[in-house]
Length: 453
Image 1: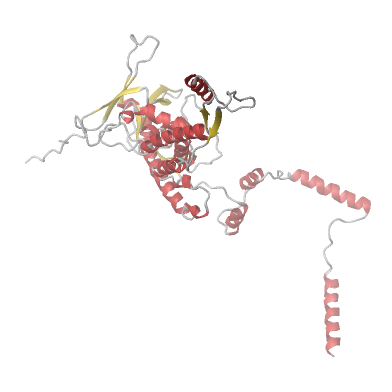
Image 2 (image 1 turned 30 degrees about the vertical axis):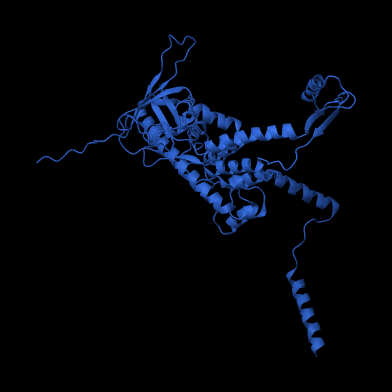
């Protein structure tokens, strides 16, 4: 009896999945790119949130782990991506590359997937002088230029389409990039759409309300900051309606200034009245929505306002943020290892069918500055040993003068000895004579015996 063949029967994507479909037109693809870009560009709190999430990941020490791959492959990948190999000398110069790929720059661009939900890159190769294919570019295909994301029924990415480029759009063709040329960073994708989910999506409602509150606060200050001018017509006028019309023109044109003023007829009044009662300030509501936006990405540390009790939970809140960033960095690590490094190895070394290098990084927030006290403790415990490189780094870090050369030290000593001979003095203390020390000890003992007798 033949063994049953197990094949996929269901679909990852339905024609319409209303349960997971975005119901806000401003946040539906492709309009979402404009909305999230506007949030990042115009709001200080949103910018702070993104930097609090992205900068620690960029600051981490990213390296290439050989993972048992041949040295030739490891060196090829490390040079193409400008990555250091784990275990190599950190001061080893990086080999020059003719391409434009830099892992640090690629990471900076890839992390915009956290803002837009997705970030696509096109792989561009060229043959090098060694006859091997080299990664020349990881060209970003920015959100806003992508008009369609084509997905197979099983949920796999097929291709992306961009808006037509060129001066004559009628003759320009719409680029269609297949999946085998793409590196796709799709964050928190739900429903197999490959649109991803922005970290700013839960904060959108708070951002909209906060924006309205800011406008309301401006209007409140503009209307009530100096009061409202009120004109009372004159009782002596023969034309009450005309008097009030002229008064209306006066109050509408009333402005504060060094030479501002108004001329009114006898019996009329022009007063600047303030608001009676207490105005409701939107400041507290604005601060609330700022806090909610930071909380949506677990960046609670952005909500510390300097009050004493607020710092009691700072360490716990920061640990929660670090764990979240660690997870995001591991997502970047997984995508880059599969679709950048492994694709590069398959293209450059088609005959290789073994182990491949992988991208690794030190834990988030593990890179810390060492104080002199910490360094002394490490040296005393013999966890590290002082050597030439360590001494030079410490002298540079703490702005100390460079170590004197041996030849200069010997010349200085020779000059000092010559000066001592000319002046008949010695700048060094002579070693004590052992006989004189013994005699002094004996005299002290005799004196003590005499006292006791």
